[in-house]
Length: 119
Image (tube, rainbow, N blue to C red):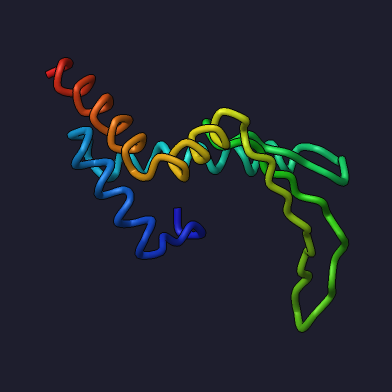
């Protein structure tokens, strides 16, 4: 998909996920692109002024359409964005903030053990 450009950090994330799960980067990228396309379809499918999409584990993003600006040979849409964090995500962040990286280390260790048991 040529319209979706990956920045350096995203490319690195795809590489890390690929390495961790032993799945080709292209497959990980395809899953993310499909997810993005699904969100774009949902956002474009409604005439509502405020549209929301859910991001697994994190929460939801709302976009409020403010209007269009006609510029040099193109029309730009203007939006306000809102983020509502999932309560569980906030709790995990708070625990990490209060306990340092210990909680995050435990979470990573649990995931590695689960992955290792599947091999």
